[in-house]
Image (cartoon, rainbow, N blue to C red):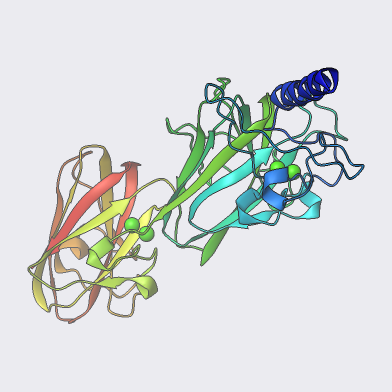
Amino acid sequence: MNLKKALGFSITILALLLLAGCDPQFGPSGTDSGQVSTPSDTGQQDPLQPSDGQTIEPSPPPASQPTPPPVKELDGNSPGDSPDKFQDGQVELLPGEYTDNALLRNDDFDDKSDDVDNYKFKVAAGDWFKLTLTPVSELDPQILIHDEGGKDKTWDYTYYYVGNPTGQPQFKLNSGIVGKEESFWSQMSTEQDSYTYYFSVMTVKGKGAYTLQLETKKQNDGSAGKDAGEKPAKAISLEAGKEYPGLLNFNDMMDCYKLSTPGRTTVTVTPTEKLDVSFTLHDEGGKDKTWDLTYYKKTDKKASTFKINDADTGLPESVTWDTTSSTQFVCLKKEKGSGDYTIKYS
Ligand SMILES: [Ca+2]
Ligand SMILES: [Ca+2]
Ligand SMILES: [Ca+2]
Ligand SMILES: [Ca+2]
């Protein structure tokens, strides 16, 4: 009896040791399907338990060694692993936080077994966004930004300005530090209704879980809760005598406003210290050619638009003109820098 008891006790200890030695973070490795689940998620039998019908009472782990939470792989709230190959599709993210993403397979840069997670998300016209990846385990991940074909080399920076947190345009984001977050952001223009970003996450070192956060922010040009369009047809209406906020930044290079006052009108735009703007003035049809500017006609009879850029970066830009029309448009162009401004006319 004593020998049996001792034997049973030894088996229990052995089972405990085996359980403690198994890293529950990574689950089974090398699965081709990429669908990785942990026993506690699915209620499946622990692979370390005997399968011959015997039941060993699960013993609680010692209080001094709390079991780390199991890693879930529900990439971007999808049912499992997001596709490894761009051509197999991408998990689409909406603005918000995603806490159960993971890179669970090899990090030996073997095409067959390395885990890569491909994602995409849409940004509306004029919106600002920031995508942040934060490792929550011993993981040094990197982000690659792709074009819609999945290539990383044909990205057009002149149009789709994408910056890392310090503002430098990059395809590849990697701090090289285990556990450190990686992020990229941009400010969209209004030339398209929306923009789609594609990116992939892979590991440089280690395996494990990460969170994703997609933040978006609308502009508030002319207190309208959106970006003012880049041509008179997409202008935001302003009332005389009020001061309005606005923003010009990277891909957002033009903001057009509709003014409604006949007679002598003065528009003043006050940029913050890092922004230099110019104006173009348009007639009530939004066309460039029939503007009747008593003053500027004298200086530039041929010009179809009248561009005003007298003040330097950070200084108020102002123009006064006489018109008989009750509707005019003023378009602000970013000449240098980026930042907020205020606009007012009377
Ligand atoms: Ca994954
Ligand atoms: Ca994957
Ligand atoms: Ca704007
Ligand atoms: Ca704009």
